[in-house]
Image (tube, rainbow, N blue to C red; front, side):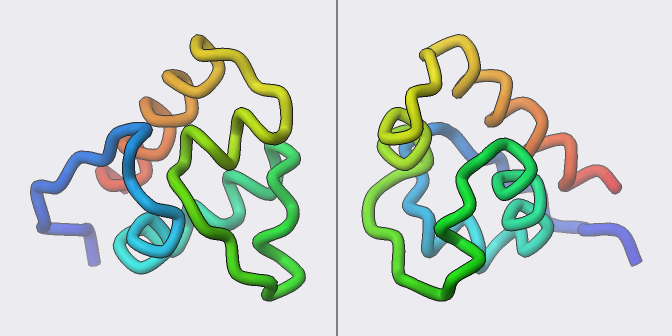
Length: 74
């Protein structure tokens, strides 16, 4: 069943909210190297802060947001 919610995320979403709203984002972020999601250790902060900790640029983070929002349309 397709996601009927008309939500959009941005780089300021907390990791906890992101995973709760879009569970498929976990696999996407792990594929991008944000693997600490896998170990079960809590990640605090936002999508932007988690990506910056891994060395991603602002442009790459914007692409993450775009790609994750596209998951909502699946």
